[in-house]
Amino acid sequence: MISDVINPKDIKKVDPVFGQLSFDDHEQVVFCHDKDTGLKAIIGIHNTVLGPALGGTRMWQYNNEWEALNDVLRLSRGMTFKAAITGLNLGGGKAVIIGDAKTQKTPELMKKFGEYVHSLSGRYITAEDVGMETSDMDLVREVTPYVTGISESKGGAGNPSPITAYGVFMGMKAAAKFKFGTDILEDKTVFVQGIGHVGESLVEHLTNEGAKVIIADINEERLQEVSTKYGATIYSGNDIYSESMDIYAPCALGATVNDDTIYKIKAEVIAGAANNQLAIEDKHGAILQKRGIVYAPDFLINAGGIINVYAELENYGKQEILRKTENIYNTTLQILEKAKESDLTTNQAALDIARERIATRKKETSK
Ligand code: NAD
Image (tube, rainbow, N blue to C red; front, side, top):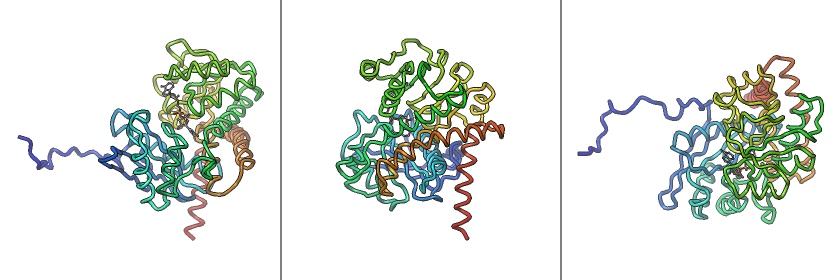
């Protein structure tokens, strides 16, 4: 017989949220559930010292809830440092919706999610991430003002992905300048892993510059489409990480630089859009440093998207968006130089600057 009463001795002594390895003094974690629409979402608010926590919503078919929680904690933390290093008055947050965006995303589910965002009264502001479209944000906008990345026709700044790609391109050029002594990418072999919204736009910049671009994706149709459009070569091998290339651009999901891949990587520069590329920041950052592989910190070079959506809150136009995004080149070069001078990993050097800005603001506001 199944008993309703759980014997306290049978409850495992695990700390499911505050004890998670990815928990980094997050201010708030919100679990959202709605039986009617099937919504299962988690909103992570990492830090709001610099402003409201802004970050996109990812819809993904996670293997289990632990994976989803871990993802939202890592992603929201990354947003804190992204906003801080980019000089934006925003905190870090992110949301994940558990499910298949192709088959389980409905207008009702998106609006219900919007109601949860609204219940936080602006402490968290959402936008699009993997599995989301501008049209989904338009639906969320029907129930809450706390959303960015809405259509230009509805007064928003539109899809942030092309701007993200432009920023990644700038960061990649800066890393190339640092490593190869030139930022001209003509004839450099660049491997773009993931050719979704950002990846495709990055491929366009790279092919325009005359780089040799190799692409990989789990979506065969997109591979054919992007290859035909830009003349990029579709990867046909079975171990991306062992391939010879000058630059590796991770533009799918995070943690691809991990224990299994890090010693195989032949690229001299890693610069891509994916969030949280290093599975374990300190460990994998240090191995890259030792191997002489220049890693352009993801949260620094993929900030174009947040610059674009921030424009909706601050009412600045396209020119200012482009100016701020172009500046990723200078910031990246400065960070890479600072890391070399101080014998730090590039990730650490970037984090130090971001943390300093947050600490200064905290001190100012607590006076
Ligand atoms: P997207 O969903 O449009 O594209 C992701 C692509 O990666 C898809 O084509 C998918 O098929 C592919 N993919 C998934 N798993 C893969 C695998 N194992 N190997 C190869 N390809 C795989 O997402 P996006 O908006 O282009 O974002 C890409 C990455 O950049 C994400 O990590 C996202 O968090 C990050 N990012 C995006 C933005 C933005 O403005 N969209 C901003 C900052 C960071």
